[in-house]
Length: 163
Image (cartoon, rainbow, N blue to C red):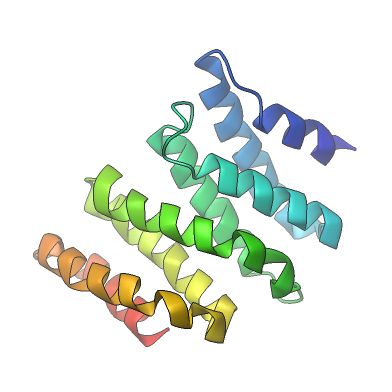
């Protein structure tokens, strides 16, 4: 019941205050992941996170998208999930994560966190990543050059490569 209220509020548009509401919704979902969502609820959350990661929505400011990434990581790290429920949203989410990494984030710490999310996504979708490997492979050298002496970022890049 509570989840359905959050999902409907997450798709609201209008006032710039909805950016804050979207961030808070991501935070609540993130904190409640330990309380095992049903498959139907997970599908709604994937749909909502896909919406929150959309860079063309002006209400999805960077902080909303970063929180959505962290929530996605937490959801995908759950042990017993049906990855088939995530796959319909995977191409869009992957594209939006790459846009976030390449065009929207400037702080290396933020990029490192989002790159860790990308690594989790790659591990969970396994062979379904094949059509998208070129996009990811092209991204990594750019991020490596940007990382300079930041070894945390370089570790995240290497982790993504080995996923």
